[in-house]
Image 1 (cartoon, rainbow, N blue to C red):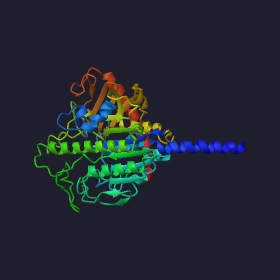
Image 2 (cartoon, rainbow, N blue to C red; image 1 turned 30 degrees about the horizontal axis):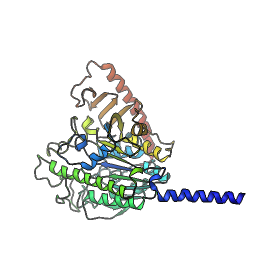
Image 3 (tube, rainbow, N blue to C red; image 1 turned 120 degrees about the vertical axis):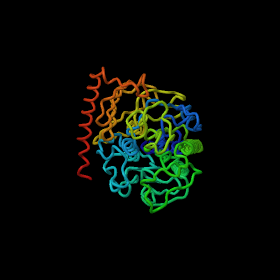
Length: 459
Ligand SMILES: [Ca+2]
């Protein structure tokens, strides 16, 4: 009897294994692809109202999936949002250095603490292949590299910006890597990152994978695929970081070319998924790390579009952090749905962990919430208060109410339900609401500051 029992188990195991290998779309753990565009504004793509940039592939994602109209990046700049996405925590918990962009000059030797639990480490533990192809901006050299933070494979740049053609960073350094080795490649950033991503999908088509594709586009230097290269090795571009722009009053043609390159890349990623029959077992998320630049210190004009929003990148008005967000997973997310639920980048951490069936470590707080009930069931998320703090600029959001404090200036209070453009300051007459929101902020600040002391000894 015992012998037969074993044979039977062996047979069952074999059936299960062959099912697993022959029909990857029936894997219990979905593949996860996160396409993160750099500096893409709320109004830069067709499905968010743009009428000049041609984005059919991204628009198709929205037609086949869910679009959020009230999604926010954790910071109004690159480093903070990336830190929050990867850790599931407010970036402020990592210390003030992570409130703004990590400088390649004054913070060249700093990086995101290696002790943090990242979503890549967690998914790797859950059996996922983890690949990152794109911009890191959480450390400029060893040991602060993606391959030390949970990614099996990395190709791309470590700095906050680089020439899209020559891959020279702002400080004149060669900055294009494969894993932890400097390995310069010839090609346009969007094309190279797409190529690596498609190779990663091919290599891992028969096992669960997490593909993080943080494009450098549409960050400056503003260069489309057909624009010339700008930077050369050994020259600092600290005061000339924007690229070759003939008409400074109208940067948009270059940005349009970058947006359309990103759209084409998105189409190619979706084609690769279909080619490997992974379409129905892959959650694809498309979003941006912060709002777009409309102008740059009025040196450059007509760059991106933030639609009806006030402000732009680096500001805590909506234009700085309300960004496009699309989620697509056929059979799980209802096609063509739109939701105005409020969500934030750090919600991706608990969402991805739950999809992979793995619990985050209890040693690290999770500030984000699991978005699965919203994405897959159209349910409401729990009420919560959200915070943005970049140095002296602060925003606090609860329901439709948003409290803004810019440095020493007076409080500004907006009701976003009927004033999405933040034009009508209601602080006078709503002193009690201002006080309650500000007190919530002070309590939150005390908590994140206390937690951030944890890293003092590791710096
Ligand atoms: Ca950015």
